[in-house]
Amino acid sequence: MQRYSGFGLVKHALSHHENWERQWRNPTPKKQYDVIIIGGGGHGLATAYYLAKEHGVKNVAVLEKGWLGGGNTARNTTIVRSNYLWDESAALYEHSMKLWEGLSRDINYNVMFSQRGVLNLGHTLQDMRDIQRRVNANRLNGIDGEVLDTRGVQEIVPILDCSTRARYPVLGASWQPRAGVARHDAVAWGYARAADAQGVDLLQNTEVTGFKIRDGQVYGVHTNRGDIEARTIGCVTAGNSGVLAKMAGFRLPLESHPLQALVSEPLKPVLDTVVMSNQVHGYISQSDKGDLVIGAGIDGYNGYGQRGSYPTVEHTLQAIVEMFPIFSRVRMNRQWGGIVDTCPDACPILSKTPVKGLFFNCGWGTGGFKATPGSGHVFAASLAKGEMHPIAAPFSIDRFHSGALIDEHGAAGVAH
Amino acid sequence: MFLIYCPYCEELREEPEFHAKGQAHIARPQDPEACSDEEWGDYLFFRDNPRGIHHELWVHAIGCRKFFNITRNTVSYEILETYKMGEQPTITAESLSRDDKTADGVQVADGGQQTVGASDSAVNFVRGAKV
Image 1 (cartoon, rainbow over the protein chains, first blue to last red):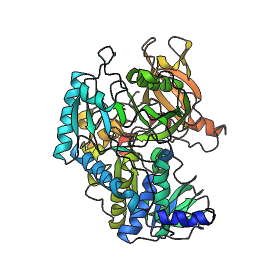
Image 2 (cartoon, each protein chain N blue to C red):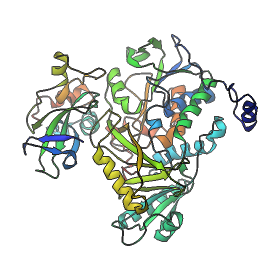
Image 3 (spheres, rainbow over the protein chains, first blue to last red):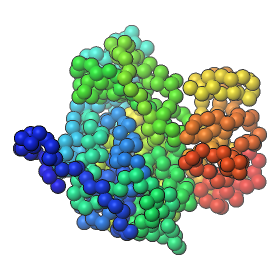
Image 4 (tube, helix red, strand yellow):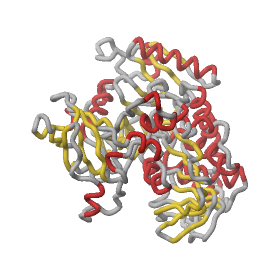
């Protein structure tokens, strides 16, 4: 792999940037691999990278039915934070946060991770009690956090309507300074390039159409490019996880919903942090390009269409304008949807399945992007050892039968 | 935006009047105390999540406030029929695949309206229960 550096940039400038090597190969599928990862999004590519780098499992294929990072990795609002309430999820997301902090150097790819802080606003007394509880829980888990009052919020975001005239006055917020945003496409491309350099085969336009299962043990997949064999298979397919589970003959406690996001026309820098509000139900940041990146809740119905309904767009923008009257005349540029697989307890599933050798990493719902490095890291360890990593273990599918749910609904400031 | 025919109001109304409430025809086990953890977990949490024909429960929240059912394609989002509580769908994945009308890439959900749990035992457990 040609390493990226400032010196390299200068060197390639001398040849008009015409001699950069391709970031990854486009190999033909082998008949057999040690491990197959289904799904070439951020989580799948990260899993493949850590498998090769940390566990020495280099005979790995990533099967992607479309192109790398073309699903939810390319469709999210790029927010990264780890201020979750419960110990299990705090451990998972903070593990991820620590990896984010060294990621660009680790994979030699600028993922533009910007720790500009995230505010979760409180608008009612109960919001503020929940925020205090969560920030205390975060601190006990070694995660940075502060409780701010209205004045503290106004100092960080001067353009936020913190007046008492607001319909839902801002009473305060939780503030995680280490949180922020990252360039989502670069995360997928960076992991892809780093995994490819380790010898991982990235197979695009390769769609899994079925599993080869004998005596309850998976030993391969059928694809549109022929059968490929492996006795360990990790399925990381987000919204389509239910479809793959059905191919393998079991069900998951998941429902797939459209989640929409939109960006405005580019503006001069006006918002240098991330603002989320559970109560008025929207979140916003400003990209380096200048456009406002906006998201809110899922469309309520099940859907695989990668688009949603206009009433949800309207609701989203009502929330943004409620918080930021200054944006009332900003025009929206683009709008899209991704398919998120939501779990009943709003926590992911990292688990073995009824089929031996087949592992699922799914159910991230509306908050998977921030977990990309951590998810890949612990899932790779689980695939390499055949046993779930201690951080992943509480997220077993068994919890929906044992009742040991990890109920992060609302408690984590998840705006859904 | 959906225009949804409420079978009680008997008119087409706009989507914001309605709320989707998930998979329809899930029968509550007749004797919950007798359920195993698997059966109860399946009833509470496990759902068909088909890419294709889906029977789902909706409520006309700011209309007549009644619950009813919709058969809808989760890929094209086309609403195929709406029907009242206690009724059964006339259009199912099976009926469409018999007529060979399923769109490309649409998965046929097996069991349709009567699958309740992930395990066979849970399905058998509620089989015969009136929905």
